[in-house]
Length: 357
Image (cartoon, rainbow, N blue to C red; front, side, top):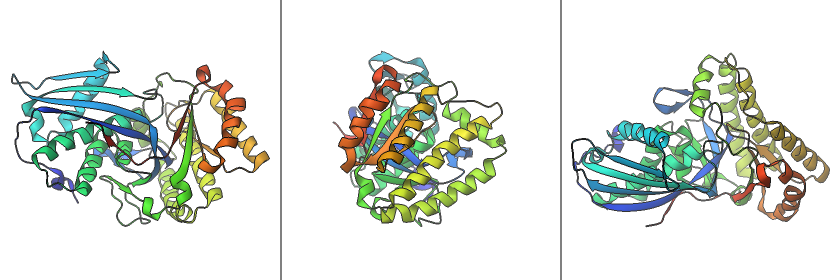
C-alpha cells in the first residue's frame, strides 16, 4: 500500500464523541535516526505494553467559524505545548482526513505514566488520537475492514511519532522495511506475533522510574542529531542485522539471544547520544546503578531477566511471566530504592488499542 490508499476523499460533517486507549511500547531493536516524512533509517521491533496507556476522548462538532477550533486538555488542565503539537499534527494529516477542516475539535487526554520522560508517551498519545480519528471515519464508512482500520491508524500515528506506528498492534510489532519480514513497511507497523514464540507473548516489563521529569533533549532532537553522527551508518547496518537475527530468536524462544540483542541495542543508542555533536547524556547515576544490579542478579541467579532503555533515564526490566514472583522480590528489595519516590510500574505485554465508548 502507498500513501494514496489512505486518503478519505469524502467531505463529511460529523457530530459526536469517541474514546480510546492506546498503549506505549518498548523497542527491542531501536528506531534512532530518520529520513524525511517520518521514514525510519532502519527497521525496529517492539513489545506492546498493556498498562502504560494514554486515554483520549475526541469530540467533533460542525465548525462555527472559518478557522477550525481546537481545545486540548491533558489530565484535566489546558496544556498549550501539547495543544500546539496536536494542532501541527492535525495540519499534517488533514490531507488524509479532509473532514477535519469542517469541525471544531475537543481533545481530553490522560496518561497512566509520566510523559516526556523516555517511556514513549508520544507513541501512546498519537496512537490513541489516530484510532479516534479512524473511528469517526468508520462512522461514515461502516464497511471499513479492521485490517484497513488499524493499518491506516498506524500510518497516521507514524506521522505524529514514528514509534507510535508500533502501538496499534500487539504483542510484537515491526516497523520499517526488512528482509526478515516480507510484509514489513516503512509506512506503518506490522504485527509479527504470529512468528513469535509464546514465551515472548507473556513477558513482563517493570518500568523503574529513575526520573519522572521531562528530559532535556527530546527524541525529535535526538533523531536530528543522528544525521551528523559519525557512527550513524554503522549503527543502521547493525540494527538491520539485529532485526534479521531477532526473527529466529523470537520464533524459537531463545531467551539468551533475546537478552543479548535487547541490552546491546539499549547501550548502543545511549552511546550514540554521547558521540553526537553536541553530545548529551539522558542516563542518570541511578540508571547505571540499576543496570549493574540487574546484570549482577542475572549472573547470580541465572534467571532470564534483562534491561533496556528508551530515550531517557528510566529502566525497563524485562522477564518472562513465570519468574515474576522471584523478580518482584528483587525489585522491591534491591531496585526500588534507586527509583524516584520508590516508584515503578508493573506492566506486561498487551494487544494494542481498546475502544472505551
